[in-house]
Length: 225
Image (cartoon, rainbow, N blue to C red):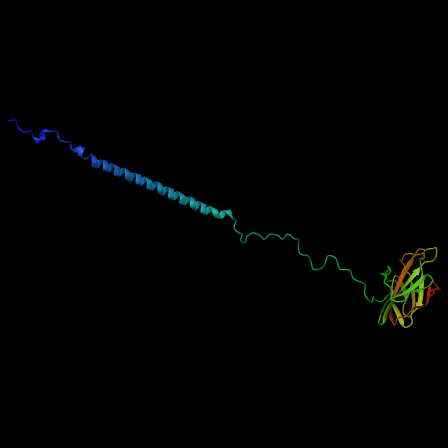
């Protein structure tokens, strides 16, 4: 009778072949861990790089606007010039006084006064006219206009008259040789000659009652009014 085959007579599967499945799983698990670790490192690097960029951007943003300077530098110079003094550049023109100072021989202005409209009747004589131009309480002014009716320039002239109740104290356009009630007026030394047909204005101011000149004479001849 043939002997039964021993169980060991066949070729059983080797041991190592049985452990291939677990090893494969271990290898896969290890690779997955490596991949996850690499991914984590990459994410960490990206995150750190972005933070650095944000910090760099945040650090540079204040440089865009210049901060206000505090002290240190001098204040900017004003655009205008230095302040002017209190005195005006051009002094105001002084007006003519209402009651001018008393006249004195040789100290009267050469220019005739500014013509004003007469406030009374105009008295016309021979080569001379008289006009009342101002009248106040206790003071009046009169103007005499001399006309040269000769053919020669009138270089010198003399005018005399009286003012009863009033004293002549001021004179314009001539020289007050004698004031008071008995008046004597002469041409100024530096006044130009009156040409033929020309005129010259003389104005006087008198204190007292308003009156018309009496006994008027021009160069020794009656004025005719």
